[in-house]
Image 1 (cartoon, one colour):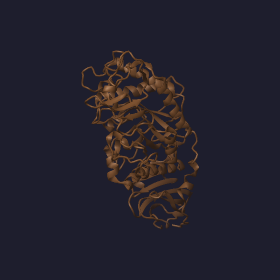
Image 2: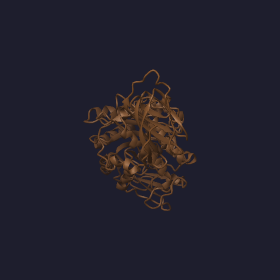
Image 3: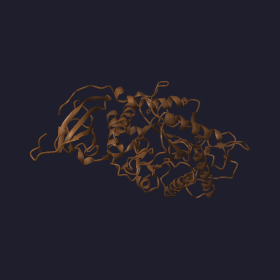
Length: 491
């Protein structure tokens, strides 16, 4: 291979997206390659980014625990610095979580409903009136989606929250939920069988609650329908029961039906349930995009996207932080590149500035306003994948595992190839005859190590990275080559 070695700092490679354009849309599934969304231009939009628990509602802990408040503009700047363009905007349904003795451990605000009085709720504040929406909540949502748009970012607006219904190993959020009969003035009881949790609220078993939820969904859509950078997510990690699945499917249909009468229509997502969730429920739903759990290899060897759904592989569901830590930074980086090569997109559940999420002190160690540098490998790798996705004609790129001995190859055969080598050493790529430009990217140090051109005959061609460790090879055919019969086998 003819090579002209020229190290290129990653800053030069990334210069084209240093000042992001406003996010365009609305997104819709790209009909010619339904692994991706498009903004209507015909270009595929690659989504990747970090999200954190308190990027919409503020979370106030008990007095003995630090209470960081997210500076939202600083958060967006942090994402932009990592070349991220997508995040989940977290909602919390419960106003408070309490321990067994009734002591409040967490408070969440703002919430969608007003608390005008007429009695005291279990958290010591006035009861909710479920017929009165809290305009401040929806205005904050709108302003935050708009601010993200101006940074070139897309936002998944989370509508409901599975961790607001039952403890799931933590403190009890149902005691602070607006649909708890003790907390509202409307006679709504989301736990009619007195289980101590509100699982029935995320089913279709209580028509009055379903009607309230539909009214809330309409209010959210009315607030953000005109914005181009919106996606919807039904709920975060609800219990994986058939009743809950039916409720989520109903909400997906309801959103789509309501938006049909609106100026814009936006993608609707379903993320995997926990516990007892299954990826099969996601694929059979009417959702446009899904986030699976770690089954089927999504943790270490993600399967190739087949176009049934846009797949956004989120560590929150597929690669829990303890597994990420056990795997180590190199495997975290590989996860990002493997997903790109397999036609998936990625999200990272980023603890950001939260020192003790859910009382877990081993997850995160920020220093003041600086996030924990341990997670920089993953954050940066995700940004690197987006840079390459944006450089490619992604709309034409399809996972072709068999084209490379690495089994990680995204390609438009005869035109463009992105190959990831997770292990060290040489590998092969099957190419048609032609003249190619190549670029070696060292993902460990975010640097283009070398680039140049070469001529290939038809068949498997061997490549050896010019550095140690995992490697990315980017190929584009610049000229086809007509082979003579005696050209075959010459490399």
